[in-house]
Image (cartoon, rainbow, N blue to C red; front, side):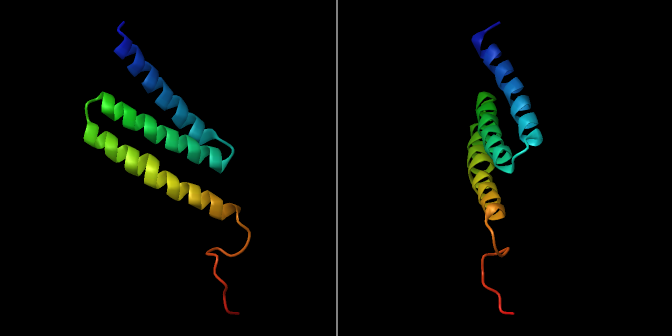
Length: 90
């Protein structure tokens, strides 16, 4: 067994484990952090498959942009007050 094959098997097993942990985590914050880690690991998997363009898109969109939006959503859920943070006329 070559080192590259062992790394690929470890990466595939890690992807399955991180996905399972993200889905079964009790905390939303932990789920989002694991989702970001999953996106970065997927980018690495795409790079290993010589699909560098997809790897860059996965890292930028999957882990970066979506991760930031989900972290902001979790922070908004934790904030007390209005839904959108604006004062409403009553």
